[in-house]
Image (cartoon, rainbow, N blue to C red; front, side, top):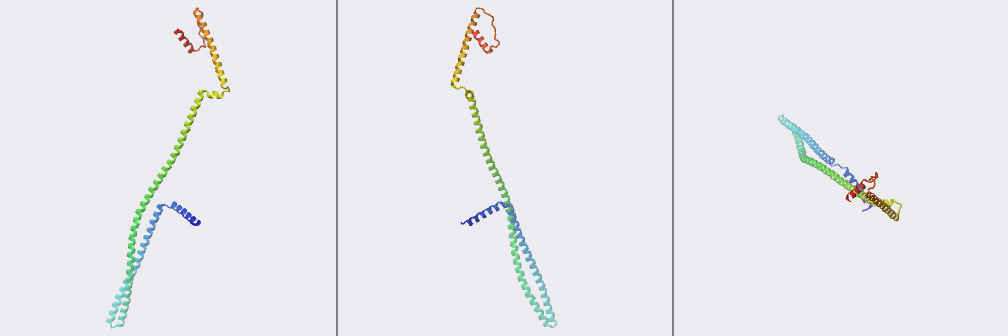
Length: 265
């Protein structure tokens, strides 16, 4: 296929597509129905014209038949008056009129045949038009139903696509939520382990270990001091020493445990 042939084919295809989109089935069916009705009207007009022409010939035939009777009476009167020449002339006119009547009858029969044929065609056309009218309305209803069904299908398809997009969005949101929750849990865990404190502190591992040892030493020294004080207090109590005094700054919980220990002893 040459370039021009291919181009012509493409152009025709585009035009056909445009025509198909612009074509309204309702308008097409109604237009076809009106065309058939116009054809029926033309047939009826043809029948009316033929009938008019036939009636005109029939009237002309009737006028000639009256002339034949008139010429026949004239010939009879001429014979009664011994005027054979007048009788002959009257009979000649009668003969001419009868010939014309025969020709008219032939034309009238021909017109009658055409009229009968047109009437038959008219009846068939009326039947076809009525059938087409019923089919037209059925086709229009089917088209409307198909169009409505197509719109519903398109809406469902569109809704399905939108739901797919929504589902994907929900999946992404859930994934982001899970990621945020995992990050939050990881941050909490790092916070509990002190990783953030280590990261924020300027001390290295050795410094932290030394600080812990120093803290433990200070705690042990303070504990020994307390033990010594407690021993001295027990000695004073055994000698009936001074009155018990309550430290206003003492921890109530510690005091309660000490009392329990005393009671236990």
